[in-house]
Length: 250
View 1 (cartoon, rainbow, N blue to C red):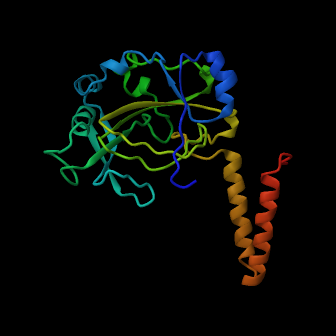
View 2 (cartoon, rainbow, N blue to C red; view 1 turned 90 degrees about the vertical axis):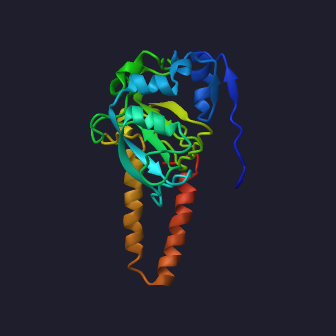
View 3 (cartoon, rainbow, N blue to C red; view 1 turned 180 degrees about the vertical axis):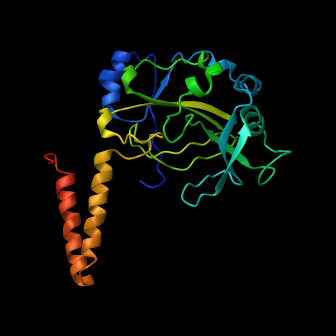
């Protein structure tokens, strides 16, 4: 229901066997506590990240407001040295800024060539690699990317879904200076994914193809007078509902 929040279960001490057999098949959001993620949980302070990340230039989102909107694009892209980004992102007010003294920053790390390479913190930030341990729940060949994220206090990322996860719509609010690493694993066979997708946000190939077919069908219906177009469009909707939600979907 609108406005209703999903209560996400929090479990501690979950083994790989328990996760794969009982939790993962449910395909629902879940918080696993007590996982050994390495020294990053204690070492990654503002000062430490500034020093370890160095002056590598990173492309960032800069917004004048806390709620970033991907539809209206209420942000701009800028480039900063990593150490300066960390320092600015930890501040409430800025002496140096692009838009305003209380602007917000968001980093989503990219591959060396964003058109060809996925983000992997171990490659883009090698000095931080030793601080983090990836959970060993999935097979190595299922690994897609590990995205390093940094955000200003109060920043809210737009609502979206990830193709490499539970397709659950979600957004993220950083209540304080936020540092995180998203690790994406492939749920489907590799051939189901768009090979040009480096962000993990392109729909599966079959879903994209189906959407294109539907668009062509709707353009074809547009050739009919309005009364006929409305009649046959309703028939199509009913046909899709009947087939798509049938247990014997073929």
